[in-house]
Picture 1 (tube, rainbow, N blue to C red):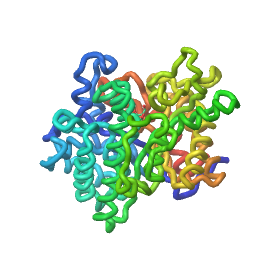
Picture 2: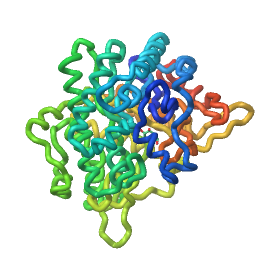
Picture 3: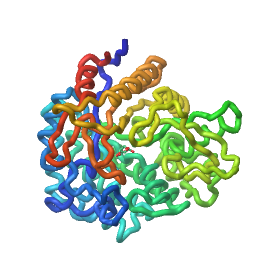
Picture 4: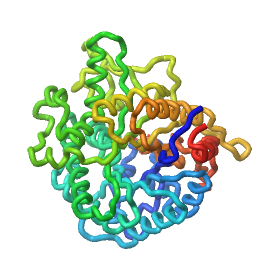
Amino acid sequence: MIKFSNDFIWGTATSAYQIEGGHNADGKGPSIWDSYCTIPNRIKNNENGNVAIDHYNRYKEDVALLKSQGFKAYRFSISWSRIMPEGKGKINEEGILFYSNLIDELLKNDITPWVTLYHWDLPLALEMENDGWLNPDIADYFEAFAKVCFERFGDRVKNWITLNEPWVAAILGYGQGVFAPGRTSNSEPYLAAHHLILAHAKAVKQYRTNFNNQKGTIGITNNCDWREPLTDKLCDIDAAERALLFFIGWFADPVYFGDYPQVMKDRLGERLPKFTEEEKELIKDSSDFFGLNHYTTMYAAEDDHSGITGSVYGNGGISEDQDVILSQDESWPLTSFNWAVVPWGCYKLLDWISKRYNNPDIIITENGFACDDKVENGEVNDLERLDYYKQYLEACNKAIADGINLKGYFAWSLFDNFEWASGYSVRFGINYIDYKTLKRIPKASALWFKQIIKNNGW
Ligand code: GAL
C-alpha cells in the first residue's frame, strides 16, 4: 500500500514557450527560441512554438482541465519577453495581464501556482545587444525582471522558481549548440552557468530583502540523472561521483555551500570562473527548497581513453572534462526519447542529494515519460507511461519512508507540447494534443493521477 501525507504537493508542469503560442501577440517581444526555430534544420520538421498548443488563448479551458483532474498545484513559466519585450526597461502591460488572469483563474479553482521565472526563453534583444548569458550584466537584468514579477504577482504567487535547469541552458545552449542560442564551445558553458547562478542568487536576495512581507518561498530547479558505477572498481565509483558533481554539484554546491565542487576546480582550471568572497556569501543558502527535475539513469565508468568517448549530449557535462563514459543497461526499458526507465535510480539520487545537502526539502518539479501515443476510439491508453509514474512514485514513497524530505511531485507534462529540438514529434503529456484541432484528450495516466491524488496514494 502506497500512501503519501495529506500535505504532499501534487502537481503538473509546463513551460511558456512549449505551450503558449501567441509568439507576437499583444506586444510580446521575440525570445531566443522564437529566433532559433527560424534557422533551418535546427528543429525536427522545422517546427516552432508560434502557436504551440494555443494555451495563451485557451488558458481558462486548461485550468478547468487541471481542476477536473484533481491537481492541487500547477507549475508554469513566465515568458520574460512577454513582460519586457526588450528584456529590460519598458513593461508590457498586456503581458502582465495574461499572467495575472492565469494566476487568478488558478486560485479561483484552488490550484496553487508554482511560477518559474526562466525556462530558457531569453528575450532576443538581450542576446543580440548584450551577449545573453555570457555577459555578467545579465544577472542585473534578470533581477530587474524578477522584481517586476514579485511586484505584480507576488500578492498571489507564493512559490517561485528562479531558473529551470541551468545545466541545459549552459550545456545544450552554449556547449553543444543544439538548443538556443545554438553556440558551441568548451568554455562558454562554464561562463554562462556562472552568470546563471549569480542571476538566481540576485533574484533571491531581491525577493528576500524587499518582498519578505509576501511570505513566499523561492528556490531553483536543477536537473540530474542518476549515475550508477558500471563496476565496483574504485575508479568507476569515483567516475560516477564525479559525473554527479559535474552535473548537479556544479549548480547545487554553490547554492548550498557557496562554491563549485573541488573536482571541477581541479579539472577545469581557468575555464571555471571564480566567485568573489562577496558573491559566495550571496549565493550560499539561496534556495528555500531543492527543486529537482529527474528522468533517467546511466552507468558511469572511468574513461580509460581507449577510444570510446561519451557524448556531450545527455552526458552531465562536457565529456572530456570529466573522463567519464556513460552507458545504459540492455535490460532497462527505454522511452521513445531513449531515456531508460530506472526507478531505483530516482531513489538513489534523492538519497545522494539528501546526504550531500543536509536533508533539504526536495520538490520533484519534473518527472515524466515519452512515448508514441495513439488515439483509439477517442481514448489514449498510455499504460507504459502510467507504469512509469507508478514505479517512480513508489521510489519516491520509499525515499520518504526512509526519512528523505521529499515534499512534492510535479508530472511533466500537463500536455503534449513543443519538445524543443524534437518539435512536436515527442509526446510527454498526460493529456494528448491533436495538433490539427488542438483538442485536448485526457490520457489514461491523467485519469490515474486523479485517483491517486484523491487518496494520496494507491
Ligand atoms: C526538461 C525540460 C522540459 C521538458 C523535459 C522533457 O529538461 O525542463 O522543458 O522538455 O525536459 O524533455
